[in-house]
Image 1 (spheres, rainbow, N blue to C red):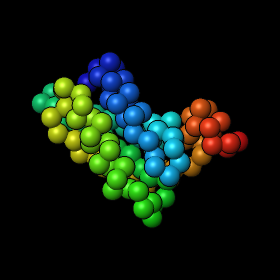
Image 2: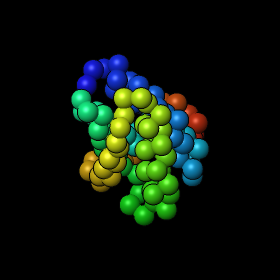
Image 3: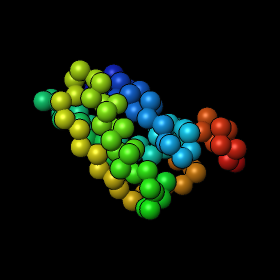
Length: 102
């Protein structure tokens, strides 16, 4: 997968807004990796802000919906991982400013 495709996938994922925080999942630092095979199989490795996140299933569905908008993507698998543990250090400067986090 080339950098342009990775950028396209990350751009699509920036449209996925965490319903509780109101910030996209890329700037929140929830996306750890994206991959796309030659045959259009996308794998997203991500985490959630907490293990008990009630919006988890909704966020996963929004990730799939966003990536299916890309013509190169035929199938999407979202892998939720808990290592490394998510924390505010994963957030972008934009997300920290929007949420008032230092």
